Image 1 (cartoon, one colour):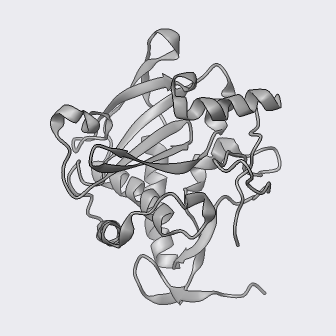
Image 2 (cartoon, rainbow, N blue to C red; image 1 turned 90 degrees about the vertical axis):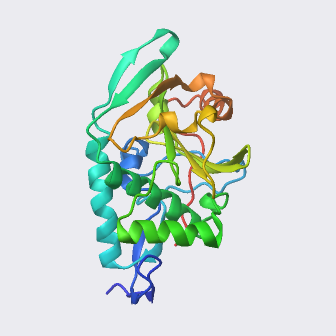
Length: 257
């Protein structure tokens, strides 16, 4: 018999049995699994312990009700991202567009990934630290279903391209960096790069941050970028080549019980 773990749900705050929640939704791992359904990926820690988790990165954070709430947003996101229109350009570049997106549901899905990464105690997410103020605000937005304006915790989306199928097999440890006075968090997963802006004030329009985010009217116009053009990814990509492994990652993401 599997023991039940009771604690305070990090979303609703009630004392309940806690589920082993995915920090990153499993559908974004789809092409990271090998034939035995083991997840493959890259850690930014060269000395990371090598393991083969079969269920992704999980932690006891949410109760059944809140897990189901987030699952609904994840199910919607699967459909929303499934059929982008791509206009090819030279050198592997392209223009990517999506339309008819439910802004509120899609943004709350993205917020839930950022929030879960911040509250997680797993080493893989150690660089995502929103602080109490922003964690509390985002938690409230998720729980109440309030997406907020475009600029508040918005997320830029870019699609990756490569001649190698490895582009859809890369997941990297999320990273933090600064853009002016704004805190940015970068995730690489599911063949995409997500860049969140976390700030108490709105960026100026000339900074161009918001042009690659889903608009309130449900449209996205962004870029497809060759993985080789992104400096923060070229080192990881070289690891694949040096190891002689193109279809599989040479470093594996550890999981904590």
